[in-house]
Length: 230
Image 1 (cartoon, rainbow, N blue to C red):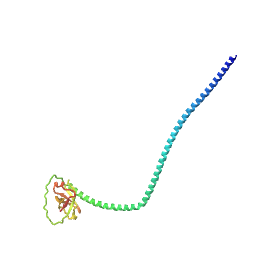
Image 2: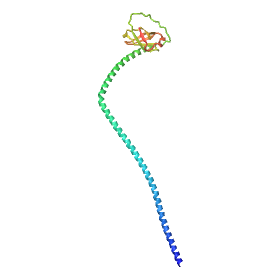
Image 3: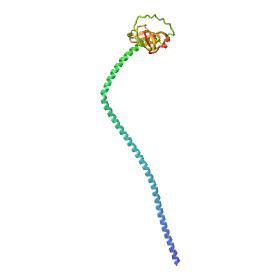
Image 4: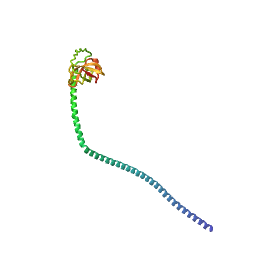
């Protein structure tokens, strides 16, 4: 009888312990699942926080860049405004100077117009000479009969060759009727005190003359700046 009671008690104890163990297992498993779920949630939350932090930093960087650009724009606006104010003040101060300079330029233009008028006269004279020479046919070679030179006691004059036209064998000299030069006058061409040839005056203006080169070979020798005398 005692053994039976003891066996019943043992069975009851074992069953109680089994119930307690099963209860503890269920509780621990639920806690473990909750812990695992919380861990996963925390990981996702940390990733979300990290992403939000990165986005916040990106926005802050963009904001800083925009603020810097805004400061630069404001500085440029201030600088340009100062320049405009300075230019306006300078314009008002220099207005009288500009008017004076304008008057000076107007006078200079008038003087230049006078010079251009004089140059136009020279150009017309040279065109007249070229036109006259263009009417004459070019010759490969020719013989020139020189007239005897008669010394009449004309005054001595000296000038320079201004232009040389090799194609039509004539030169322009800075001696004219104002210097006593007349048509058919013979002028001697010198370079460094050595005579290199002769030219004969064909066309005359008050301050210039066109002279024909006597010999074709002389065309290659005569240069601008050579001295001519009568």
